[in-house]
Image: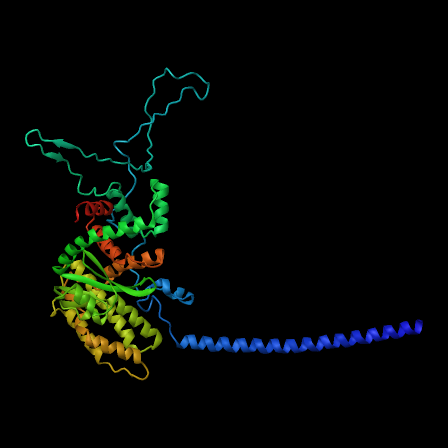
Length: 473
């Protein structure tokens, strides 16, 4: 029995040793495989880094792409503005008119605060006269309440001819039960002016106004307001047709999953947005049959825009700065660097002309120098094989060289198209909040045109919408 137990223990020891040896062998293989995979990952990361460094991605600092589309790796670049430091302190500058909460001369409610006992000895002070010490005011808003107006129609019988004379309902009262002009104006204001989607708009009317509005009611209201606003847009378009300077731009918009387009034309007093299914010159021809014959058109390098008939044109120099920055980073040709520096000199010349309130004449030395530098840069030889993008950009500048310095010779012409960018940005904000347009994109354009025009004219937006709903027909 003891001999059997000894043999059993020996077998167990041998098996355990074999198992340990097997585990050690597998462990060595895994370590070797792990080192191999780590080296492979390192090699792939190095190749990827080389690939990314050789392929420059466009973002908001070197193209017209919005900052929201930037890749995480380009966030740091995005913070590097192309603008130079002005030397001024941050915040409001000298002469800036600020606003602050001030005392009202006619408060709606007065609350007199008097103590009825002495805080030291407890003596009764109710019979002692009180002397005014100081005041404080609190400004708040009252919760809105819904009110109902009932119109009762009466008839009167003429005692002479026997005619039954019936009174008339107000023109705007067309249904047995309906919402008033202010409700419709608020729907347009919050949906188009403040970008609220239908779900949040319903919730707001329920919580704040105690009104239960369906999405169908909201949609119908916006369509109706859009129809009325379209009449005002015709007047805006007529004024733009007479404007000396008009800026224009276009942007894509998602309509039921399809990419459509919204165009803008604007000046210092007017903004006109137009929905279209295409980005070509067809939209321009439909909107402006004869072009803009009295205007200088400020735009980007979009060919459809540049085909518009006009007195003259000005390319957006801010766009060209970003284009030049991209060429500097991607192809590193000296042309792009020199062109970017030339653009900075044009900006400086424009600032000086605005300070003097006097445009340059073409014979002025500053203008002649800038023209000469431009001509020399456009004659500069660029190797098409090594720098194809810089070569294409130079050809474009040669083609549109007459549209680069219009801003210097006409004081009212801006050097950039930022006003159009600001007008078109509202479309993107609306889409970012609501996701897409389903059917009210034309109504949005009409109403937003009215809102932006009202802002430019320092008019109250809500009152403007209310007047349009009441009087436009």
